[in-house]
Length: 409
Ligand SMILES: NC(=O)C1=CN([C@@H]2O[C@H](COP(=O)(O)OP(=O)(O)OC[C@H]3O[C@@H](n4cnc5c(N)ncnc54)[C@H](OP(=O)(O)O)[C@@H]3O)[C@@H](O)[C@H]2O)C=CC1
Ligand SMILES: N[C@@H](CC=O)C(=O)O
Image (cartoon, rainbow, N blue to C red; front, side):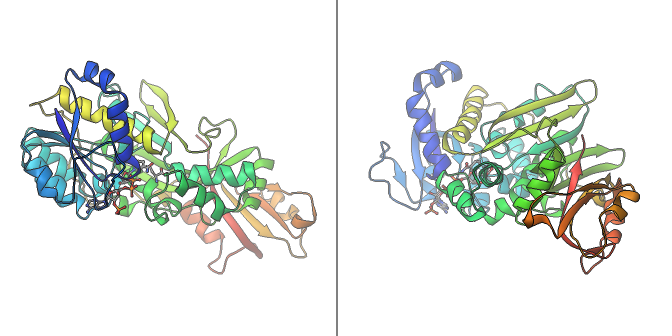
């Protein structure tokens, strides 16, 4: 089977490398030889081992020998149009492009079904971690209830570099970019949009109905400070960017936010570019998935697994997907109860007033911390917390310097 590759960047380059390096084992596992027929990219690659580059999409679309195409170019334009045309032309498409899957997955999966081909996206969540396929195969017998995930390699790498190596945010981000972890526009990583897209894909697949990533409440890591990290550590906890989704009787909850996790939490020890996904099911209990969440070869490994699957399922549509979304299906996450960490500047009054009200109070030693302290509120909804912290950023007359949700389970 000949494949096409659209986009020869970090992931596309990794796909090319893995196909060349593991040709024998890929042939053994898929049942036939897989070779690269054409590669679409805007740039030239004179030093590449491949000599089949084109700048014209029609060359891939109209090549009858190409049965599967890896769309690893990113973004929705022109990836959406290209994917649609390929599926309609009877070619399977595999992708790492979570933005496209989150936005147009429902339609593209339907087009794949109508044309008896496949649209697979294992690499779209968790980089090299197998998570998409387990959700619709190995775990298919379970009613899944909750998913908690560290889903973005870039932000987990940045947080780890800042906390463990004392690196600045800017330098840590630069490192993530140099390693090929970050999105073309890293705003998507650090502001949480990438985690949001992955959370939406997991929620749609696990609970069966489309969840729109644009509607998921989303906060990134840009407001997290090293001071917050130190208060969390004194409290026996760590800070991680989480994507969370849970099934309820009348819909699903989903949110993306920095979260304070007790250091005994299964996700607390996941550092660097690694991702971790905890899936909970009735009967099943908890299952953990762990591995490299970004980077050329880990992601290419997931893309290749989909290519092999499509080759093994030639002329057969793999049943996978979710139904259309529905107004009101995504429930209001602010109604969920939680404890909240708040960092406050100290004025003349003492933190004891909070202790008396049932708050945990955290103080840190040293000159740097003499004019501030932190509290952890009793459990309350997001709405109750919003009321507690006034619009001008005060809690009980103290200036709020930072606030982060605690995630207990
Ligand atoms: N990097 C990672 O670790 C992971 C990435 N992903 C996803 O995989 C996808 C690819 O990511 P990544 O490889 O990092 O991105 P890169 O930017 O490294 O690669 C994308 C490649 O596609 C090319 N390209 C873009 N638009 C076109 C076009 N219209 N026609 C032809 N070529 C085009 C780009 O060329 P040019 O550079 O000239 O724009 C570039 O060479 C994204 O959706 C990303 O979110 C998923 C998991 C992990
Ligand atoms: N930018 C993403 C790449 C993989 O999905 C990340 O850092 O996780």
